[in-house]
Length: 117
Image (cartoon, rainbow, N blue to C red; front, side):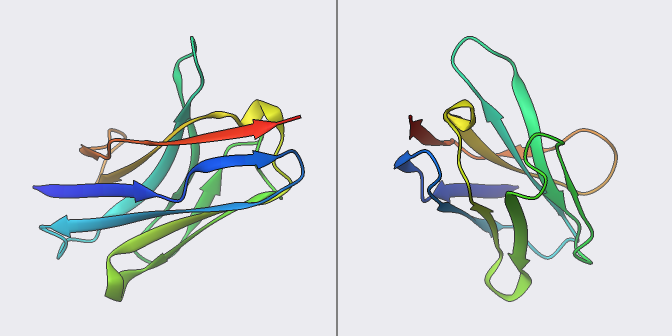
């Protein structure tokens, strides 16, 4: 079992920046791929970014060039640096982990990000 805890959300003006963190605990010895997802009110949960154990990254088109995912394996922590934030980035952001395959096995409780115009 892996326990994920997100932090760093908050209220920011458009054009501003936030850095989200996700701390993992429990069975963290495996080579997990870590991902960030977001869910806006009334919408489905969408993929934002992912990073493999070897630090290969992927991003949703909507955040490319603005968001950067990174990880510190020694600290069992993954980060999401969000720059040039837009009101449409407003959502609950979730951290997730998977060992392999398409489906993520573990999810955090989410952290809220609100971008004001």
